[in-house]
Every structure is written in C-alpha cells, then in structure tokens.
Length: 141
Image 1: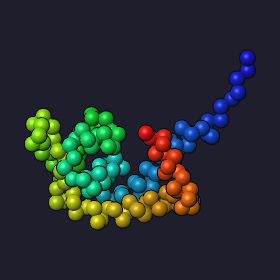
Image 2 (image 1 turned 135 degrees about the vertical axis):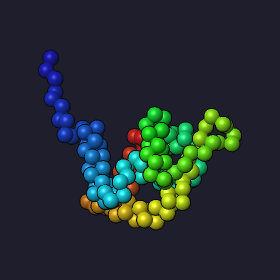
Image 3 (image 1 turned 30 degrees about the vertical axis):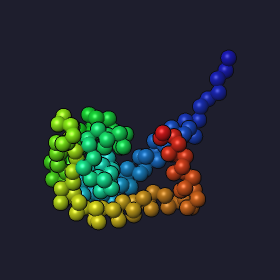
Image 4 (image 1 turned 120 degrees about the vertical axis):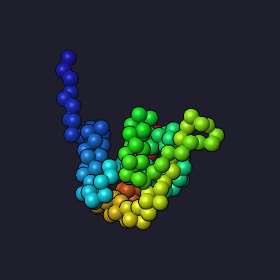
C-alpha cells in the first residue's frame, strides 16, 4: 500500500510554528532594549488589564504551566516589575501585583507592541486579520 507523501510546509502545525517564530523575531527586534521575552510582556499585559491576579489564574489565562509561570514571575520580580503578595482569602496562594515601575512601563511598551503587531500582520487586510484571529481563537479553545 503506497502512502501519500506529506507536504510538511503546507501543514497547519508547520505554518503556525513558523508564524510564531516570525512573531517572536519581530517582538525581539522591537523590545531588544527592554530585555523582556514575549511571555514576560504577555504577563505584564494581563496585569495591566487586571492587577493583582492570583498566580494560578494568571497561569490559566495565559495557558502557561505553573512551573514555567513561577520562573516568569521570579524574573519579573527580580527586575522590580511585580511583587508577590499573600492572598488574603488563601494564605497558600499569591496575588501578583505590579510595582510602580511595572505600571509605568505600560505607556512605554504598549505602543512598541502595537508597532510590532502591525509589522507582523502588514501583509494582511483587516478582514483577513479578523478571520485569522477568529480561527486561532477556535483552535486555542
């Protein structure tokens, strides 16, 4: 029985991986002087929207496992951008809170992120961006 050869370069997984690599490269070019990874920036973004999230809720929202999340928070804490505060409702849990330094980065970093995003999707028209976003949200959930 003869199998049909797979065209790896046309598979959704391959294309998503390559798109992700390109997005990370563009992010790093734009954020180079700020020494933040895309994941660290993402956590700051969640906290700029809703400060004081529990570590477990932040992990769930970002879909980052607890161990990796702990390391990301450690690095942000070391940089003075966040602090862990004991959750008054559960002494075993922590709330992740922005410091003044972390809050002050939003007006600096948000425009940079928007420029990086614009560069990443520059070849797409607005309808294609909307369609792509909807499809990726379907796949994510």
